[in-house]
Each structure stands twice: as C-alpha cells, then as structure tokens.
Length: 234
Image 1 (cartoon, rainbow, N blue to C red):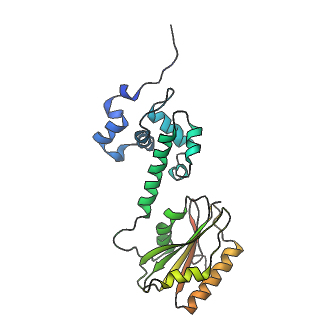
Image 2: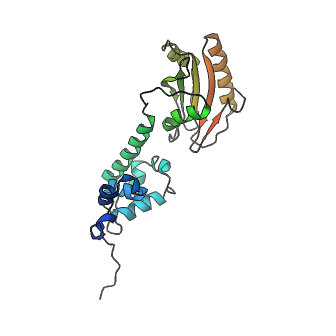
C-alpha cells in the first residue's frame, strides 16, 4: 500500500476556504496576503497548492510586500518550483500596479505641512529602487504640490545632479515658489553623505537667487527617511 503523502487540491477544500470563492463570499479584506497572491498564481505545483506556494514566496521575503516588489522575473522563476515566466510576470505586474496606485495623484493637490507629508508623496517612487534617483516636489505659495520631476538617475551609490537642469525644470512652472529635494539610498542608510550636504547647500543658495525656497531635502530608505529640515541642517 502506498503511504506517500499527497497535497490536497484547492478544489477539495470547503468552498469558503478557496481564495477566489472566499474573495466573492467574504470580501477582499478578509483574505490574507498569501490567499491574494494565490489568486494571482492561479495554480500551484505537484508539491504545493497555490496557497502553499504563495506562502513559500512570501516567507522568502519575510512577508514583506515591498521586498517582493523588488524581486526580478528570473529570481522568481529560479526560486520556486511551480513558478514559470507567466506567473512571475503576473506577480511583478501586480506589484507594479500597487506601486503606481500609491503614486497616483488625488484630484485635490496634496498639501505639504511637514516632512512626513512630503515623504508619503515621494516614497512610493523611490523606496524600492535598486539604484539612486533624484527628484523634486514643486510647490505653490499655498504649499500644494503641483508636480513631481525626476532630475537624474544613477547607480547604486550615487547620481549626478545638475543645478541648471533642476532649476530649468522649476522655472518651467510659473506658479512654483518652493521645492523639496529628494533622493533614495538603496543601501538603506538614511544618513546624508558629505556630497549630499554640499549639494543641498549649493541648491539652497542657488534657489535664493531665483526666489525659489528649498524647503527640505529628504533621503528615502526602505523603512523610513531623513529630513534635512527636521534635523536642522538645511
């Protein structure tokens, strides 16, 4: 007699425990991350149901969806039996849609009254990147963000910022009276380098000559941010 253990198919589960059916019966808010991911996967493998495969994928990133969003297609394919190109692309596409949703401006232009406000606006763009990028938030006299502009993109340890390019973009928006600088540190280190400090000082001085106030400079990491203004070093 064969006592080899077998994986119970999702079809054999009670209807209310199947991810798709549970989604329809109880609502999306009642599904775990693994169950939502299992819906994206659609099926598992010979060893795993879609849910157990989803659990393995999430365990590999310590259940951190931000970390999952950084996984490349080859990494997902190589790391898990049962994940081919189609499933890997589906996961990556879902992560990207989530990121873009965070980035979408609401109809009412967001107002910045603290570094935390600025962080929540710019972090979705910068926090998951494997390389450095430098962006600015452009604010009107009422401190409402009218635009976000990318200034440069570089490597894992730095990116070059041209003050002329930066202020050319600022001056192309006639209503702008102030800006907030922001860049990410892929390493996760939130403290500014000497180059960061020098650049901030240079841009602050240049802004004064153009009547553009540099309100803050944020360094974005995976788990938080550093604010030059909050630290009193702007």
